[in-house]
Image 1 (spheres, rainbow, N blue to C red):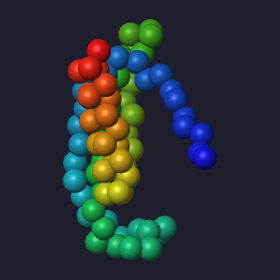
Image 2 (cartoon, rainbow, N blue to C red):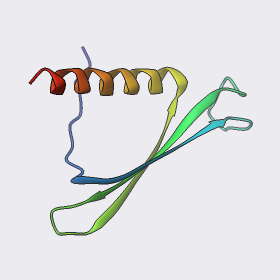
Image 3 (cartoon, one colour):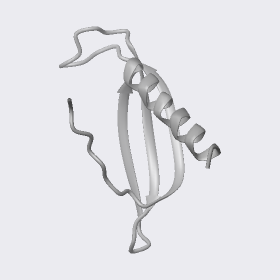
Image 4 (cartoon, rainbow, N blue to C red):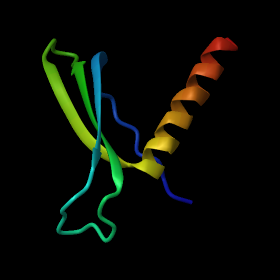
Length: 78
C-alpha cells in the first residue's frame, strides 16, 4: 500500500483551475490527453502568500474530486 504524503500548506486563499489537452510532451506516451492545471494560493504561518501549482491527468483529477466529495460528506455529518 502506498504511503500518503501529508503537508501543511496553510490557509487556502484562492483555488484556480484550467482544463487543457497535451499536444506535445517529452514524457507523455498518450498525446491529446486532457489534464487539469491547478494553482493554489495559500497563506503560510508567517503571513506570506505562497503559490502551489500542479497538473493532474484526468484519472488523477477524478480521484482528487472524489476525495473532496468525501471530505465534504464527512464534514456535513459532524
